Image 1 (cartoon, rainbow, N blue to C red):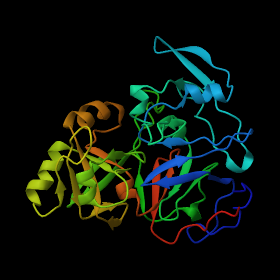
Image 2 (cartoon, one colour):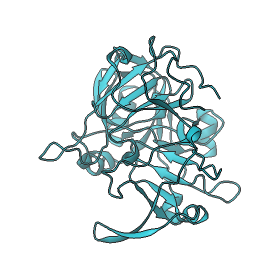
Image 3 (tube, helix red, strand yellow):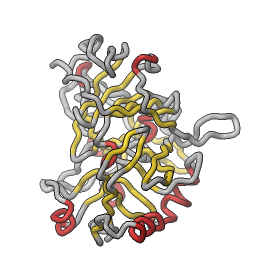
Image 4 (cartoon, helix red, strand yellow):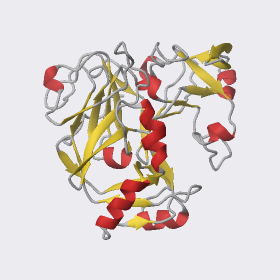
Length: 332
């Protein structure tokens, strides 16, 4: 994919903004993985998650790439960090934003029980990816997630007015007393059954289904994108709408149930069905809500976003949604 090939491609009926860069990405079961290629020809795979925490590279990968690893102090603890590798121009991704706790560098972490929760073991016995890119990678930037066409773009600078759709949703961010953003977790408001819900905008929300649940839900893989909802809202839906499909003990490991919501209203569109996986109330109402600008009841993930081309403009705190035909594939 050439970085210079996009100046005249159609975009929301007009033109793609200048300095828009295609990100080497693949969409797997509703989850975005980016696959940059280093200057030495090594392809890396990062699981990306706008609702996730830090950014990291597996220690083994950093060593294989011969990256300089240094020790730094983070929150009173010693951590290992390494620079983002140099990438080929036609398969490039940016590093984390400079304001992240690790600066423009990545944490280096061993592949252990903790990181296996993010990068689980594959059938070949290897990690699912090379590392993880969370909120500090997405922060302060403008991104397009074209789910139908399976393309991701980074826009360098604000979008021009003619590229903005009428279907938009405000993004809320927690700020400190000076107005500076703190956690960079985006909040988005949607509606289900006429009731408004504040959720985390969470491109990396995922679940792993049991074999029995996968058979009921359909699909080719148990590991897939989802959305999350608190138990109290889940039970409210279930009581009010006994006809909505529920899969009990759907999630491997936790035994969490899933509910299929027929319609969700987002930015003036109504789409569905959308699967939500149940989570304990305190996971969102207490723990995550303390990192948001307002309390939330769950997370909006790929099970809902799959219907859209979404442009998340972090600097302007707004997300644009479109269901029109997407961008053509970038030229090779």
